[in-house]
Image (cartoon, rainbow, N blue to C red; front, side, top):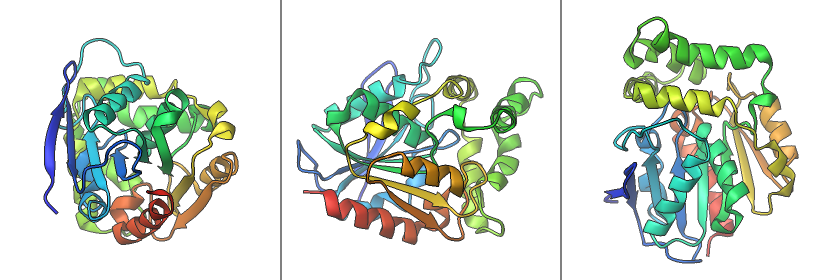
Length: 275
């Protein structure tokens, strides 16, 4: 399946890769993949062609990531949601299936809180709804592991990439996937990444969970060291009617570590709720 790269809007311009049958208003056939805080659209290289067989499938580089533009000033986390509206409007999409990995899932929840009528379903993989769900030690470790090497130690993203990647995968994971995650982290835009780290630690959409009215799938890797099975089980229990799935042999990057199983789970879920 051939994929196309669009550049959407200005200030900042967004890079969105997409393919498959065009998904218009209300037909339930547009699926948007949203990467994590150390990611880029290539994290979904195993998803886009597979889902484009049935859906108009798209993955972006969020503002300040990959081939999307950097931006002036601080980041307000909801800027991501406003960017996502631009993407849906660009493609003429009324409702989208949102598949968010880690920070991409937090963007999905924030987007639902602001624009619930634009969401068809939610798939939340390796997601937590608030940094309040972390212990203080977990929060400090999350921030320090990402910010301190760049700000205080003078390292580059490439310097810190192998250590970060090792914490995002299950033990004994595929070396090729490890290399893909290292490449993703190495490509980070330092200034924009730091803005994102700072903004995301103030994130809290826990209050919306009990009010979600769209079909929701919650996915977690059994060895996820960042968002544990217990944390994700609790998240799913707070969303009315949510489906909960544990993926064996995966860490935090389940869609990359076990792409066939991830595609089976998410594809089957979306088939139930697409037009």
